[in-house]
Image (cartoon, rainbow over all chains, first blue to last red; front, side, top):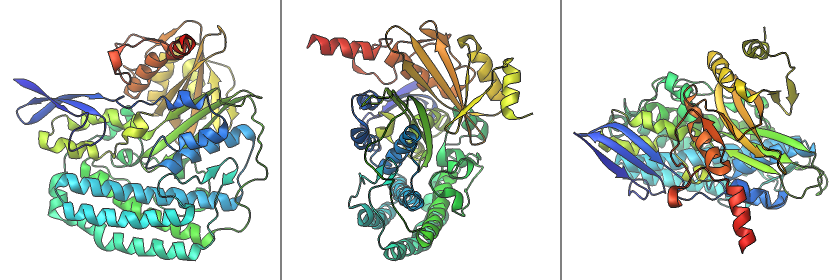
Length: 360
Length: 141
C-alpha cells in the first residue's frame, strides 16, 4: 500500500518555500510531485515598469547567492541593445567577481550538504571558509551580498590591489585543498551518505535539460565558459570537471573540483588584470529596438536573459529570466524515484536548489 | 552540411538563418513546432526556454523557443495567429514547467497536454492573462 508524505513548504530540512509530495511504499519513494510558487514575485513583470538603472538593482535581487551573475547577464543583454563593449579591465573584473561568487556558492552548498549528512563540524568549517570568500567580495565591492558591481558597459568598482586579493585567494585555496575537499571525498561519513543515491542518468539529464554541476555530474560536459566564452574567459586556462555516475557523490566531486578550477581562474585573472578603464564613457544610452539575449554560467548552471526594448522607451518591453534551478529542479522527480525516504532531503539539496531564482 | 542546414532540411524550409547578437534566428509557422522538437532531439540539442511576448494592441502573441547546440544558441520565432500552439512536452520533457508558466501568465494554450498549477497558488486559477488581470485590477483602484 502506498502513502503520501508531504515535505514542505517549510520542512525543517529544507528551510525554503518549496514542497515535494513523496509517494512511498514502505521506506521507498515510488513517485513524487513538486510544487513551487510559494514566493512568486513577478520580477519579469516588475522589470517592465522600471528603467534600466532600476532594473539592474531589481535583477540583483532575483537570487541572493548569484546576485552578481544576474546583473552580469542582464547588463550583457543590455550592452547588446546599446552597442556597448566593456573595456578589457572590466571583463577581467567580471571574471574575478563571477568566480568568487562560484566559490562562495559552492562552499555554502558544501556546508548545507554536510549539515544534511549529519556532519555538523564540516558545516561549521565550510561556513567559516565561506566568510573568507565573503570578506574578499566585500573588500572589492563594499558589499557582502548585493554587490552593485555591474553597469551597462562595464563595472562600477575597480580592483585597486590585486596582490592582496591574490593572497586571500591563495589562503582559501590551501584550506580547500587541505581540509574541505579531502574530507568530502574520502571520509566515510560523506561517502556512505552520497554514493549511488539520487542517480540522474546522462539520457535523463539531457531530456530534462538540466544545467551546471548537475549536468556535469551526469556526464554532460557543458559549460558556457568554454562552449560560448564571455567576459575574459577565452583567455583563461581551466578544465571543466565531468563525472559520469550521476549520483550525489558525483555532484559533490564536480563542485569540489570546480572550487579548485575557480581558484586557478582567479589566480590567472588577478595576475593578468590589464590596465585601463573599468567602464565605457557616458551615462546615457540609446537603446535600439529589438531583443538581445545573453547567457552566463552561474554557480548552479546556465542563466539566460532575453531583454526586449522599443527605441525611445524608458523601460524594457519584456525581460525573460531563465534561471538554472528552474531547469534543474523538475529532475528531482527522477532522482528520488526508488530512493530511501531518509535520503530525499540530501538528494534535493544535491542539486543546490535556489528557491529565490525559481520563484523569480 | 552544417547543423543549421541540417535543421532547415529536416524542417523542409528554405528561409535563411539570421545571426544577431550571437543567436541564430529563424521564423517558423506554429504548425512546425513539433517537427522542430523532433529535429532538435535528433541533433541532441539542449532545450533552454520559451519566451512569450504579448504584442501591442491586438497583434496577438509571439513565442521564442531556444535550444543550445554545442554552445551555439538557436532561436526559433513563432508568431501566433491564435492563442494556442501544440505542446512539445511529450517530445521534450524539459518544456514542462515553462509551458505551464506561460499558460498561467499569458493564458496561452499548449494543446495536447494537461496542466497543473505551477507558480500560482492562491485559488489555483490558471489560464488567466495576468497582464490583463493586473491592468484591470489597477484600473479599478
